[in-house]
Image 1 (tube, rainbow, N blue to C red):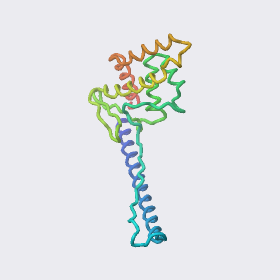
Image 2 (image 1 turned 90 degrees about the vertical axis):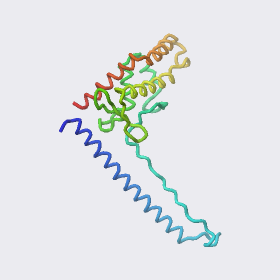
Image 3 (image 1 turned 60 degrees about the horizontal axis):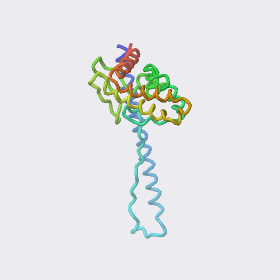
Image 4 (image 1 turned 30 degrees about the horizontal axis):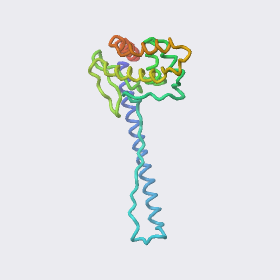
Length: 204
């Protein structure tokens, strides 16, 4: 069995495990609701005759299982693991390799390949996780790259404000120029090449 098939088998086994876990959670929730219903029926309200009580309408509190980080255009939230200082440092390098490392930090950090939200299928196809489903990118991965670049650009724009560079105006201007360059086809193809090489390395 090839390593690629092994990763896929691991992924399907992982999905089955999650489904079984979800079924157990639902069984526990149903059991708990039945117990609550029984308890309420045994203790009718003293302020209201039994025949006038409103029927019980239990509400199931569903728990969403996030299998993978979704790959979609979004506002990356700065926080403990993604600080303003970190994003500024990445931007100030004005280097595609640094940008790709930023992408890896957001989508792949501390994850085995089986939990990656982006996968390489063949030279013309990749797939990505969005809305709790795998979506095929039949455009050689260009749709995925447009999403990823859009997200890191938005993060860079968020920190590249004049207040952060009052004493270094030249850096602010250089950053703005670089952010503009990120929209160009050549830049995106550079990031796409890095992404494919990274994913293919994991399949060897």
